[in-house]
Amino acid sequence: MTGDGRASEGDEDGVRGARRIPGPRGAADDLDLAAVPLPPLPPPGAGTPGEAVPEQSGADAAAPAGEDTASAASPDERDTRDEPEPAAHAAPDDPAEPEPEPEAPEAPGADRTPADGGPAPASGSVPVPDPDPGPAPEPCVSAAPVLPHRDLQALLGAWALSVCSAEETAAVENHLPRCLPCADEAKRLREAVGLLHSDGALDLDATLRSRVVEGCLARRPARIPIPGWAAPYDAETARLDALLRDIGDADWDAQVRLRWFEKERRTDRWTTVGGVISHLTAVDGLLSAALGLDDPLGGRAPLDPTERTEASWAAVGSPARAVREPWRAQSHELIRTASFAGRNVAETSVSYGSFALPLQDALVDRAFECWVHGWDIAEAVAYPYPAPSAAHLHLMIDLAARMLPAALAGRRRAGLAGPARDLVVPGEPGRSLHLEIEGHAGGDWYIALDSPAALGTRETAVAQVALDAVEFCRLVAGHISPAEAAAGQEGDREAISDVLFAAASLSRL
Image (tube, rainbow, N blue to C red):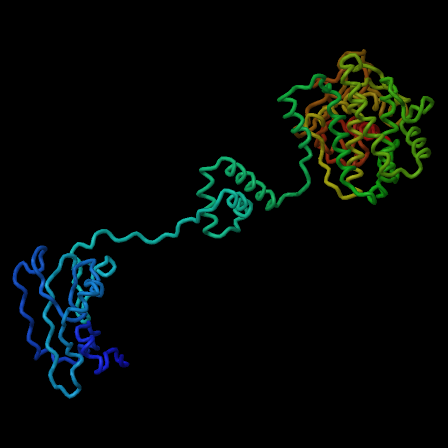
């Protein structure tokens, strides 16, 4: 073969009948179109199915649809078919112009485009648009990849964090409506992501324990429920125990300031976190002794809370984290014993040395002191410590309001309060002060001014004091003085001053 694809002259006889590759075709710009006569029109009906189509020479002849011209004939037919030499292979000195090719008759399927499998249009021809192109094709949208279930499960965390690619996101969201376990897991992960991005504090809600216990008891009531008057003590010891669990070992040596009122002045004392817990354990021992349980200080310990605290500090030395477990076990034993005994022990007298309280009031008193000293510890270690729930705080305020007439009489005997104005028969109405506590835990109390046995009423009120619930508790705890209490006052000024100082005198170490 020569370089141009034609057989050499010596072997020309052997390949004379072979099909030749046509040469390059002249460009359309080289032709004088004005001098080229138009080809004759095909006869009517030409190219219809069933008619013979004239044989065309060259590679530009139109072929029936779906038929490849290169493979139309078998090898034997290609060998025996004699085709004339294309004009493009004429000698260079031949001045003959190429004759215009006759227009190929229309064949079945010739109106199809190359994309439909039909023949390509001849070079230089202008395609005729289809008069009815049909509906436009839909835009190509990439479908979500088909992933196995295990891979989709592994993508749920990334999907919840919105870090999946577009294809992975589409795959997961197509899968969730069809798979209930994955949908539940995706919902849970999305809620967890919402918590991760929360701007609120990470500390647990102070009412979380109460709400969890309430929900559990609603589903399965306790066989032996905790009495309502013991519930504040149970809640406040649990909150303080949670605080002690969260602080580190070094925080147990943090300095805590204890504050209370003595007569007309405020007193304070410094101790450690362990010292506060030892103080609570020593005073709670008075309730343990009243219930027949073991007193942590022994049988000969004093009854006065201050003396018991001094004895406990002297015995323990420098208390640290080790004091938490005995205090916790003692508080659990108190609640368990009171719950099993029920109403039979509610009126059991608990002696504090100079005064006594029934057990139901003593447990509310211990709940109040547990909250106040928990507040002191929280301030020392920078820990958030909100007020008790409204229902428990109301019980604490009610106990303090009921103790005010006796505290006022004690200050009058000591010469620290004004004299009684009237002699009142026990149980009869007498001069009173209207104590209004604001907030959800508040209410209205009428404090007898002239005798603890008198009855305070709205009609006999000579003065009124309005205080916030937490502000009143801080006054009773000795954390603020009567002059610092932001109180709304109206009426007898002496009665107002006597009641405010009596409230502060309820505090003790």
